[in-house]
Length: 198
Image 1 (cartoon, rainbow, N blue to C red):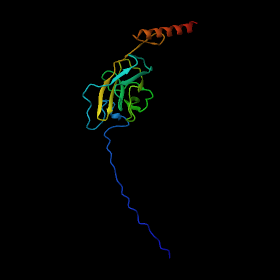
Image 2 (cartoon, one colour; image 1 turned 45 degrees about the horizontal axis):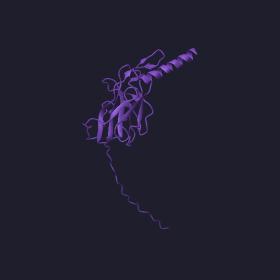
Image 3 (cartoon, helix red, strand yellow; image 1 turned 90 degrees about the horizontal axis):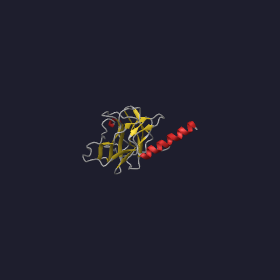
Image 4 (cartoon, helix red, strand yellow; image 1 turned 45 degrees about the vertical axis):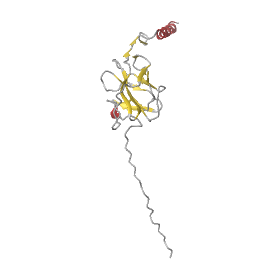
């Protein structure tokens, strides 16, 4: 008869670790789209003036023509960036391919209605966001919440207001640009006219 040796079950200690997320290291939640408030438990926005500025490459917009937006100031880790009009809380237009360390956030039913951080890596002045205007006729501005860290953030960071440019006879947007921009536009129009009559 063979002696069967039964192994005693080994007792393994299991330790359960509970982690409570007090911030959103992979981006703002969709619930922040309207008021743009981070859901950082127990932390209020900074009362001091923001060290950040939202800069655009133009003061006018045309539907379908990309506009670049840059957040200038100290490096930051988190953000929520949208385009708005008037007092509406709806996100306008759509953002193009988000830069590194950022991602789209669905706002106002638009899958590309906002841009938020995808991690807490530092972002800075070299991070450029590209936005495509919709067929809006009213003035548009950009609005952001910018976080240096979980406990240090500013809300209601706003750009200057952009107005819709008028379209000239050749479908080119016209605005009160700099003399250099006007000269370039004139050269382009002459070139096109030469090509047509040529």
